[in-house]
Length: 241
Image (tube, rainbow, N blue to C red):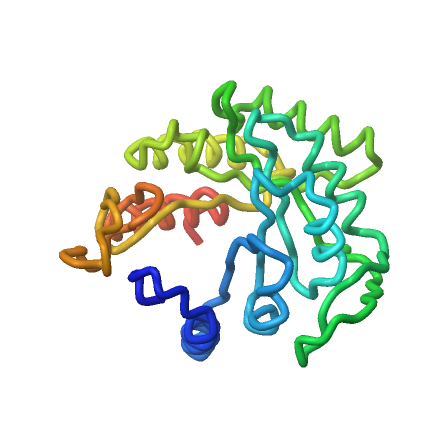
C-alpha cells in the first residue's frame, strides 16, 4: 500500500476493506480481479463482482476457489485468445469441490463448496488480436452451447481488445454496443480501464513524484471519456429512456 517495497500486506488488507466499505456506503457496487486464493477470505464479503484473470483461468486452485464465492464471477479468456479454457473453468466452478483452504482465523482446513451458479466468460482479446467482433462472439456462444451452458459474455474493451491503447477503448465499446442494439442478448456487459486522468505512469521508488489520478499499471481513459462511454452504453441499452 505504501509503494515503497515494505510489502505491508496487513495494512493493505485493512485499507482495501475500508475503501470497499466506503464505496458500498455510497451505493455503488464493487468489483475486483482475484489474483490469489487467500485474499478473498479477507475481502469477499465486500465484493459484488469478481474476475479470474487470463493467466490463472486454467488454474485448478482458482476454479475451486470460484466455486465457493458468493458473488457473480467472470473468467477471462486465455492470453492467446482461446475461450475454451474460460468455458471449462465455468463448468468446473459451477460444481461443488473439496480442497485445502484456510478458515476465517487463518487456520488450515478442508473446504467444501456447493458451486457458483453465476459464472460467465470475459472476452479480453489475445495475442491473435481482439475478440469483440460478431464472429468472435458467435464462436464463443457455440462453445457455451457445446458445453450446455447459457451464453453470457462480458467484453473487456481494454487489454488486447484495444491493443493496450486506452484511446481505442471507446471504439471497441462502440462496436459492442452496436451488436447489443442489433439484438445480441448474449452480451451482459463491458469493462473499461478508467481513471481520473488518462494514460499511465511508471512506478517510482517510494512513489516519489507520482501524479494523482494517473494509473501506475495499464493505460486508462480519463473521466470525461468514461462518462461519454457510460452515457452511450445507457442509450444503447435503454433506447434513451
